[in-house]
Length: 107
Image 1: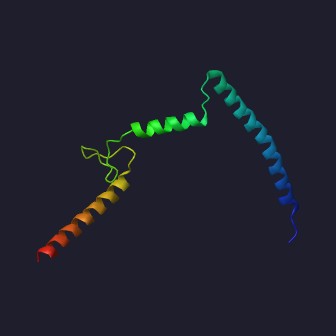
Image 2: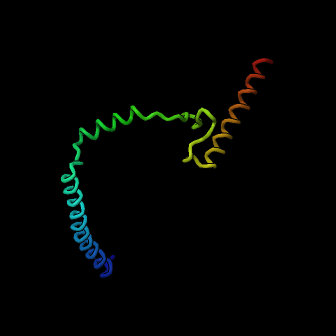
């Protein structure tokens, strides 16, 4: 099939926009870098890696990884009610199957 004039025009305009917005984005990024240099907040890649490693070792959650409950039995704020209900269903099913398995082993 032949290429329509409309598709050619759209492709041409996208290329023009790409150039125009690319220049704007480059100007913004250069401005951010200049501000970072002026404040001394510019870090090297090695500094960022070291900071990440330090943060990983210092942060300890009081919530369990598997059940997401803390020592008081509360869930974190970011867990939705639906997710809590799903987790409770799974826990209940495990409890029932465990009891049934115990009954079968006694008999």
